[in-house]
Length: 368
Image (cartoon, rainbow, N blue to C red; front, side, top):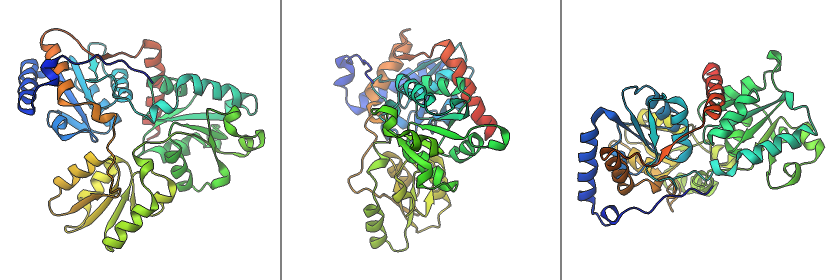
């Protein structure tokens, strides 16, 4: 998805680290409680040091909603996260994203036009009244609104099992099948966890007619999984786990559920970002832990766990390139703009989308 970030003035692009720290610190002090900075777990350390709160995307949005005295929420994350924060915060608050080009490749793999087209195509083959749409938190506000309007819910990587169980509860008169987007891997891993097999799950390719499926395949499926993935987590392969275990036979393998199923099967712990953080904290002193997730978080876990060794399972260490667009230069630019009375890079979700996205989020909270 194209987003246009204006080039920064030379004052920021040519500044050294010390000068940027001075700019950010002075602006943050001048703004005081008027500004609240959120830092996602995958954020780089030189930005994270300025965060008033750190966490995953939904957790941070809920924290932002609780900061009623803050006029400005600066979200050091990616676009869909800032949208969620705007949906959940008050009308008197404004959400800013330091770099508009900080998107999410997974979220961009499903847009509202594609999803609406898929829904219409499916309606010609099955009864969509018995189809429950579920969108992962890593999606645009328009998709959250879509599932809100169509009786579905949002899920996170930590509550996907509960949400899919709810969606497929026929005794409560809900769905015969689920359309799950945009991450096929979280959907598949959760499906296996719930006891479904490969024949119960089909991948929906939005670039092909009827998702590349036959009428019969659609009718026989329980989980229709959108062909999307995380560019970081899809890199991890079983060979990475094998190499780690060969070097550290007593090591612990922790895997994010956005990884492919053949990797998840080999993990000792599978869980969301927060679950991995908790599992590292709970591991015995002296443990060597191989983690299949984003490198900035892995390095932070290692630095903050002096009694353990935490390494990335992928030796080529792939950062989240879009998250990394948030840097001290853009943070300084946004904060100094606020000091000068100029709101830069505000993220605004329109009222109708906000209303239905809240419905989907509230359903998730009611389920979990």
